[in-house]
Amino acid sequence: MYIKKQRLLTPGPTPLYPPALHAMMRADMHHRTEDFRKVYRACLADLKEVMGTSNDVLMFAASGTGAMDGAVSNLFSKGDKVIVCVAGKFGERWAEIAKAYGLDANVITVPYGQVVKPEQVEAALLAEPATKGVFVQASETSTGAVHDVEAMGRAIAKTGAIFVVDAITGLGTMPLDIDGWGLDVVIGGSQKAFMVPPGLAFLSVSPKAWKLGETSNLPHYYFNLKKEKKSGDAGESSWTPATAMILALGEALVYVKQIGMADLIKNAQMLAQATRAAAGKLGLELFSAASPGSSVTAIKAPAGMDSGVIVKEFRTRFGSIIANGQGTMKGQIFRIAHLGYFDFADLFAMIACLEIILNANGHTVPYGTGVAAAQEVYAQAAVKK
Ligand SMILES: *Cc1c(COP(=O)(O)O)cnc(C)c1O
Picture 1 (spheres, rainbow, N blue to C red):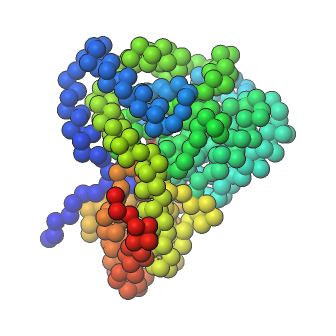
Picture 2 (picture 1 turned 180 degrees about the vertical axis):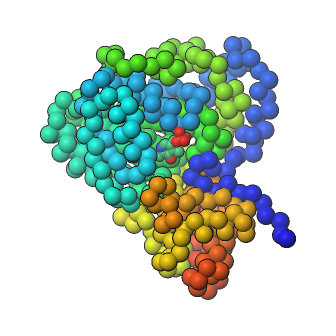
């Protein structure tokens, strides 16, 4: 029997920033007091700062999907023509939400592992000038692929449609110039690069999006963007906030600001690069080879090996939780996360564990092959900070 530390190494929830966890213990606080308003105001202001936008930023007590739901129900109207980009399980979620609210969705679907091209969105916009909105994932966590939201945003900005971006794993892992690229709604979640537990969803809303929302006729109650904006301006949330979570996020945002969003992104990018190098040396293929992102790397299990075996052995041998594929990708791929509170030591250990698991299951690789490749990336980047 060896000691096995439990490590949460999935692309949400992600490893927790310890001072943020400690901050949760200050939650014996009433939310309609100046003490709490101070915390809440700072949280919203810091979110806006790290997202780098002049748009309004609102927050809800919900997982990320709550903000996706609220964006649709507050901004659109029944029968609105929209374009939904589907490149994985989270794109499918956009399509399901659009359907649930009776939008008239043109769903552009590409096979898992690929991405919707900006030209496809442009062509769909040209074909239907009455389009009111375009939905996409900046980073499609289920496949590890990233969309070119810059090119999409520039094309959409020229039209009457608003661009609604699920950046739940995009924020903190890829540059997102919200104002410059015309990203009208950008959605984030606490349990991804923000290093705290699940429970908070937030979104930025542009003037163009607010304008569209003025004519919205879809039913909504809890997720009320206008009401939340008014409350936020007064330093409060509309309903009882998730006080402990907000204290945690506030603490984590201080840390994110200290690192700087650019370096937080760089951190994820370096880890992703090192992971891809290791996978290559271990004879493993990337699932999204054409457009791999930095929030998570999806790797195909070796031929004849179920990826569930790798996931299971990470847990049973090393106490570590990594992600399997979702839906039909289950058993085919495993996913190594890089977003948020991940560092090189986490990654080197993960790759060393992976080498042991591969060897134990018939995919023979000399020990250290993948680790050395990752170390090489680290050394060449001369990461000293
Ligand atoms: C995690 C995630 C979500 C949100 O899922 P929740 O379970 O509601 O937090 C949405 N989109 C993407 C791309 C995600 O990675």
